[in-house]
Amino acid sequence: MLEEIRIRGLGVIDDAVLDLAPGLTVVTGETGAGKTMIVQGLGLLTGGRADYALVSSRLGRASVEARLVVPPESALVKRVRELDGELDDDVIIVGRTLTAEGRSRAQLAGRSVPASVLAEITENAIAVHGQSEAQRLRRPSTQRDALDRFAGPAVAEPLARYGRVHTRLAKVRARLTEITGRARERAQEAELLRLGLDEVERVAPQPGEDVALGAELSRLEHAETLVQSARSAHGALVSDPAAGDDVPGAVDLVGAARRVVAGDASLDPALGELANRLTEVATLLADVAADLASYGAGVESDPARLAHAQARKAELTALARAHGTDVDGVLAWADTAGRRLLELDGDGDQSGALAAERDELTAELAALAERISAARSAAAERFGVAVAAELAGLAMPRARVEAVVVQRDDPTGLPVRGRTVAFGPSGIDDVELRLVPHPGAPARPVEKGASGGELSRVMLAIEVVLAAADAGATMVFDEVDAGVGGRAAVEIGRRLARLARTHQVLCITHLPQVAAFADRHLVVHKADDGSVTRSGVVALDGPERVRELSRMLAGQEESTLARGHAEELLAAAAADKAELARP
Image (cartoon, rainbow, N blue to C red; front, side, top):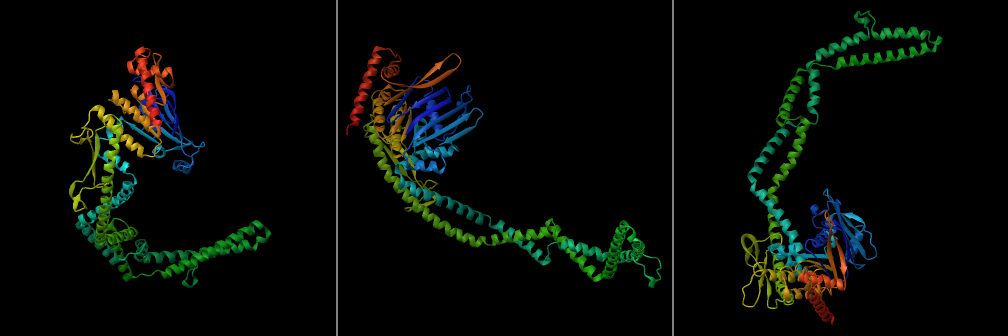
């Protein structure tokens, strides 16, 4: 139940507080005073789309905040606790803030949450029924949804399973279509992959082989040059007296220098340090000389090996060029191509498994669709009876509404009860609401079979039936009495008063006959200082309420005749409410 709503900076409402209570609360006011802003604010609280054009240009921001009273152990309280919300006893604070720059923020129990979470929380607590909802009821999908809501778990449970099966079946069918429809292209792709993999397998490249082979080719092609370089360098480091070389090499010269310095190293530590360094140099040069001798001896000129390496290099180069990469890139392609080829080769087996799954899912979907259709058909009769009962209390005692559940034949559809019918995410049924205004009249689509006033009453009856089936404790009606007057208006007021015995009802109305039944009467008033128009909300009681009803009746608050009529309306409504309260 809503305990309080505060609206700031929304449209012409500068700052208004609506103190609500159990029973029927009506909101009235002059045209343009801001009554619609109350409904807009409730729409924001229920996660509706934000209209930033409604933000007050003077304030630059708009906010709506409400105190929602809920049972302590309700599922709603448990959900708020799951979201780490802060509860004030049995009160949940919900709010929505808009800025002129186009930003929106939702608050739930002291925490910022997405608007979708706010919608989830308020879905079963606040039900807004207005003229826009009545217009949406003209759509076939909305009419089907209305019947499904009335049917309850009998439709909701199999429909949830149907939705999952329908989604899976669509994916399986798409996959089968892809496999069978592209069979030729996939076969060509597989053949190209096989040819490429065969070539890679024939060449059998190894990781980094092209780089290693390039280095080996360079040694083989320049073997004589490399040997000569090694020998020359070795001769510069070490002389060979046996070969008649009497010119000392670098190793000999450094050794001689070391011996000279070492002889006098004891005279000065610094000279001793230099002797040590000469020793290191001599050792390093001797090692290099030995390595040069070993290298020169190891380099061989091998024409057969050179020819083989050149042929292998050409083979690897051709393979790499064909793939536009190096040997490592070719190996990576081969790995990917191998997996892709396995996938393509497995499509034949996969298509058989998918076809079997398709048939199994189709059978399950048909069974679920038949179960859903049967539940809808059973609910349709009860739905018509319930709406007819509401219409009887709205001065249409002989009218009835039929919910017609039909299926359309479709050769590519779902086999159900010996027929092949069209199907979609919501089942196989087309649902149409039809009105029979009086016995003997033909049933016509509800939006075509009623006058303006009758249509309002039919829509109200349907909305009340649906809202009564909901778990929501607060029901909001936005001028659903439009186009109605006289006795029918009184019957609407009486019906809302009866509904308010089990629900909290908030009604935006322009009819005094409806307003007279209120347990609490709020009026939206506007003030204009010549430059800025502002609106506020005040609660009426006693004489003030009589004056407001007089204004609604005759446009004259002080008219004696209008005041008498207003007092008569209040007295008649009080008597009706007392009659409703009797067991």
